[in-house]
Image 1 (tube, each protein chain N blue to C red):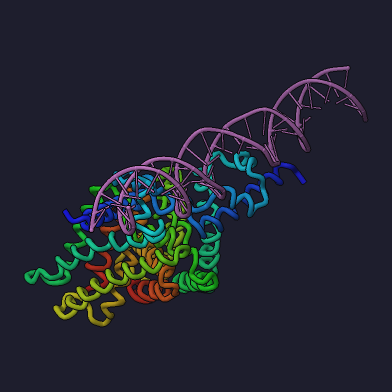
Image 2 (image 1 turned 30 degrees about the horizontal axis):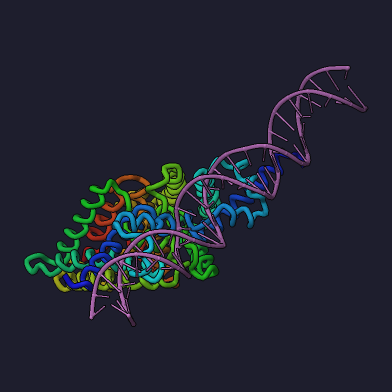
Length: 198
Length: 198
DNA sequence: CATATTAATACGACCGGTCATATTATAAAT
DNA sequence: ATTTATAATATGACCGGTCGTATTAATATG
């Protein structure tokens, strides 16, 4: 096996463990040691892969959002299902996952926006990009739903995408402290089955 | 001056500095030393006032929410103004304050829900209580607005209060990473001037 | 002088990050 | 093709500093 691939593999392993650890204990609550231990990589090797903890955090953010974008995109391009239903199914899947985790963690983006969104410029930029990419995809789905007549057209898809993302993020915070999926379920009901209807 | 009062004064000073520091750098990002330095209180004295950092955090949360509740209550009991307008004016004031702080900090409750909402049980309970008290007050204002006919009555005041709080929290996170008040302004517009209308 | 309250100091654990060195891979030279 | 020189990567001990907390000394109160 090529050496460069092996290095990439370890790098990705660190990112995966980083996602899990930062979700669980936050940025400042997680030490590099924990991440390295979880990935079975020696302490001294960390800086062969990343320039600093801060840079690592910024990469973790991008690494985290990727599967969510892929998952939503997969739902949206199922041609036999209308866009609004696709979005609803997507969020239903997220809720199932949240319940499986007993409402712990929530969304890494939301957690880090609150914790380091205005102290680490590098991570702020990364968060901005990650949320932006996610928002753009959701917006395209809502625009499609507008064309299909399942979502109101007197509000822009962009406005609704932002509203949905923001309400979802707030609902995730509530979920964490209430230990209940009621807030996130209500979010979907209020918006997707209520405010967004034509 | 009575001794007990002097002690209470220093205690409250610590809580005030704690609010400011935890807002700026989060729970794990803030050391007790910084707080004690800011309050001009010797390091060894901390445990004369609080049992632990975690207990301190839980108290800071309650200390933080108090003025917001008082401010909203003050708006709501202005008899010459209808409840919906009172709520709108209240949020307008919050937005002005956020702009004054250049979008830094946001809401301590939201930040801590994300960071330690599912790791510190004590703080989780405190957050639950703080948000609950705030929600109840907002709910009573919305119920009043329903009676005055300025807010729709086919949705419960509780549901709308939760939705407003959650969307507001999410919008605050977006505000932090976009460095713009657009998200929070849009939140008020979408809900108070849109979804909540009869 | 006895007692409680405050403050100084001590403590071990851990933080992010650096270092010289060991190992391995690549390139050059024979 | 084999050996030698060079570079890249891997590694664990270790840096100064800070963490939250415990213990001990000093001070104030009765």
